[in-house]
Image (tube, rainbow over all chains, first blue to last red; front, side, top):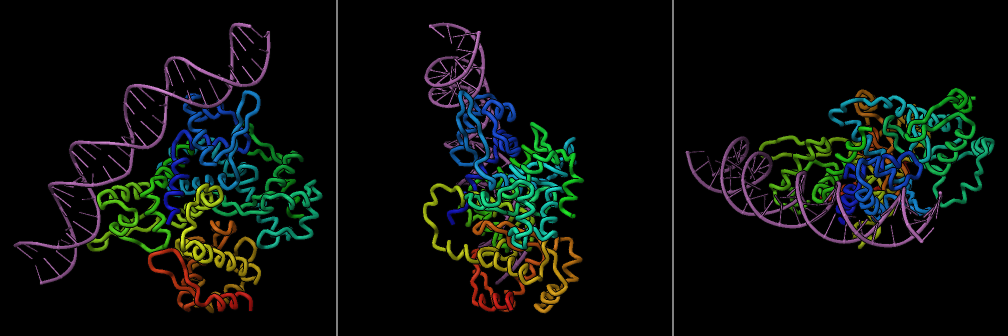
Length: 221
Length: 221
DNA sequence: CGAACGGTTCGGGCGGGGCCGTAGCATCGG
DNA sequence: CCGATGCTACGGCCCCGCCCGAACCGTTCG
């Protein structure tokens, strides 16, 4: 059993409060600079630098140098998924949940999960695509589905060629159900943003839904 | 954002090598005594006792006293799920995977995920149930499905009344797909064991499959 | 070219927490 | 009632790793 220590390695990286705050901040999907992450974590820049090195060594995040800045992002959607699942554990047996948090209801309704949609609306999307017959069981796009996605401006051929899995079920922390991740999940979210149906709140994971009605219509026509 | 420190609390609990080994051992689904867990973790009994207290305080495990023994189990399937997802992260970006481990291929083929079936065969079960029309998209049993499950000796009414969710998608570490968890997932695994199609290897998570052909037949008739 | 800024490296301080030895309680057996 | 067994509580040791101050590169301005 060599897996014991290994999951411990990853969990230790996540388990330090400052690092956990950094990772949470990166769940928004956008890359952040080292200084921004330091502020987010509430530590000095030099301390943050050390944490970021560790996270990068552990391959949980990836950094790119751009001018005199260094931008960090999560190294993959699987990391985001792991964080979501941990949040679910916290949520289900979190003891004292001191204050529900002001943004809590909004988070539960619609939020960014790295690069795709999560929350009540994310699950509704997932279920709607299946019910509509645009995704077959096993999360495989049908011919009609592919056509509908193309109509939204998504290049399915392109997505198919990418190394990233096209469709992937991601466990939803607040709903305890799965929503759609993978290349298609990300592409759909981007398309919804383009149409103005969804708008991300800059510094946070919350997503505002001015076009929720339109989105639901699109799913149920 | 109060969630930062909270996920850190959970991750810290998992992040200690000895505790991680204990949790891994409990992934087999059966309750173990404090001494057994101490041995599994490679620490003395007193040290183990301390770890177990912490894990219990954090509600990751639950202990019941029975005579002069104390049996511990994971406190819920969500904990098992979190561990599986962490293993997936390890697997995908685990750098040094020193030795593949002797039981590795067997683990990938069929293993216990707390109380239900995981691995290639677990995913095949999940997909088969959907393809067969016994589960509708969204993991809802159909009428035919319910009948088929009853034929196996599963009391669907009973399951429906339980507080536990009937069906749940659980992310499979080795397959990167979902398999069936929840009350029905557990009940199916138990039924397969009853029929002798599957047999668990006592101290480990590995599952032997003398009746794999029969199981697959059952899915594809 | 020099000042400002983002980022990293080094060193030392310090606290938390893992570990074990010893000892103290319960339960089970004779 | 006494010993063996499973488990827990306490005390002390020690090391890991978090943290910051200060100093050091590289980039970008004016």
